[in-house]
Image (cartoon, rainbow, N blue to C red; front, side, top):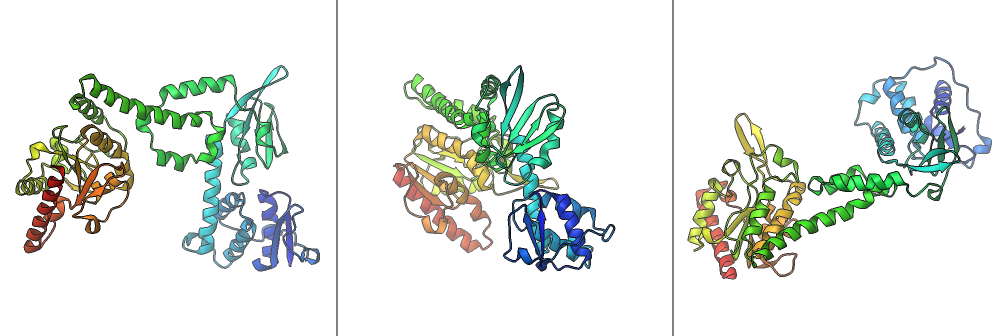
Length: 462
């Protein structure tokens, strides 16, 4: 049994020297115990054999392995040293092993290295210095809690970036101190050792609040790139929940104010909402669509229909349900005894999503993020109209209205309650489904069933 004691958890050079000696001596990976400092990781450490000294030039390895090892060794996984040595030993007989990304060991170490690179980026992006007076000078102090042993590896970045400042970076494991000329290390610190704020921070928060644009915020993406664990170190993140809530309150207030200003007439409020939707950038679909296709119909309608999204013809015309599916929809409405002019017709997603194939634009189904991004508009439309019954045409519309996946075959043909508690909804198929049925007899049968669904919803709205 060979025991290797490394001086620090991020000491790549010490690991490399030991690994070179072990490989040269043909020591199997399972016969090596790796530990850091005085931490004993094996009950038999006292009887361990000595580790051979590295033999210069004993083995050459691909540059890719060195890059992988330098990152992976910074991970907090206690098995990282053993995993890297096992990979190194295998490279002697499999020099192209790193090209096999399906190999479990290669894949696992790639994952460790990726996590380390992400943690390095997080430290650079989310670390915040705060001013702390120090005698006749000023020192800037920052607190950060990394997931891995990345602090020393990141030191050069902060020295180069803030070379003219005197600063300290405090972390639980180690502290870095720069005086403008030399970098030094200190023991780990506690959050209480770092200052809470300074005058410059208050100016920055004021500026951030003034430029904050809630229409551009994608909460899911923000949390993915900036997890909440880093928020406490960043002054601006404390403002985000309040800024979002205030923005939503202002938008809702605008609608209510417009409604009240004309004695309860929602038409002006609807026009203001539609005008705002014309500039919607809540998701990426606006970049390629011709225009926003908003809902249409009287704001006094008791029956509201929600489809999936505008198609090619709707995108060009700027009106919902005017293409082939719209023609099927109009025919079904007529047979169900519903005048389309009396109903409000809209879509769950307001921009056309498509795939370009030669000169044709082929419909593409909206994903959950796109549905959620547009859900605010549907909620505002329903708040303005307050329809007695809302009909979801297809699975996308149902998901938008209920906030979750709904099974059409199970929920079809009966009254449902929307999450707001008081509104009634019905779920049926989208008219485009009827166009896709190849069997003529089945298509006619399904059309009649669709018409019956519309009749039941209309009766409920009467």
